[in-house]
Image (cartoon, rainbow, N blue to C red):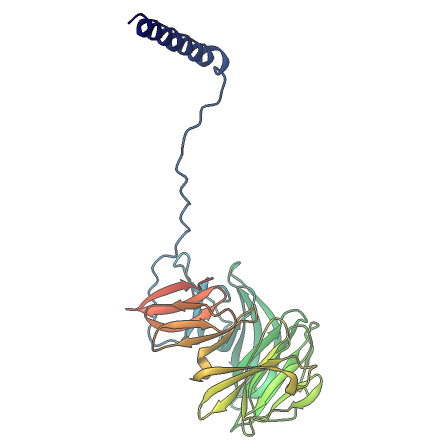
Length: 339
């Protein structure tokens, strides 16, 4: 019993000493120690676009980043800012109508051509730029004495070389191509076809690539040559790295995509065979040189380069740099691509 009593006393003394030691450390030693508090960090939500109601029955187009949607109405270009919902009307010059316009591929700026009647047989075409961010319009150049029936079919600009090509359709399949250089000098390039159906420009070179509407042959101006292909082909796109994309035609669809640089022989170009024939309008090449395919039936955009897929709701409208735009119940839906 005495032994147990001694053990109990020593345990009590030990606990008392430990308690006094801890109390001393808390009051004297750790008095300036920083106190930590757990705080939940929440990521700030990104600013969402407001709800946009799209006009019906219009040929809608989009700026490179999806910020602006545009359409023609009564001969004028109208814009919708998809971030704010603001409607913007670009005013024409007196007695003029917009014949056509084209967004640039890397900025919120467009080129537009206004047509003004000069006589019963002749018209004047005036080329302008419009900066959507600055709401600024400027005159570039004029084309006088074109046929009154002429219509601007395509506008293509090589931003790095400051060269613009304008395709003007006249009677039948005949078309005229006008080249405007950095000094605003207008010339007509010597082409290997007078029936051009499609065209695009090489960004880093002063070269036009164009397609003959009858033979489906594809040519370039610099170097001046016909591009050799074994299949019946059509020009699809030219990306920011000067790579030319052509599609092999199967029926009225594209079954294969061949791509490469003009300086390379076409038999050395790369080829991608599509899983199933696809409409030309559903094939898109972005500024990263990635090939994207739209599947209207399933509402999916497939990136053939990265193997990523992005699902969207509603009816497909178009693709832009970072996503796909669609419409559901008259409302615009913007879906970012999966990364």
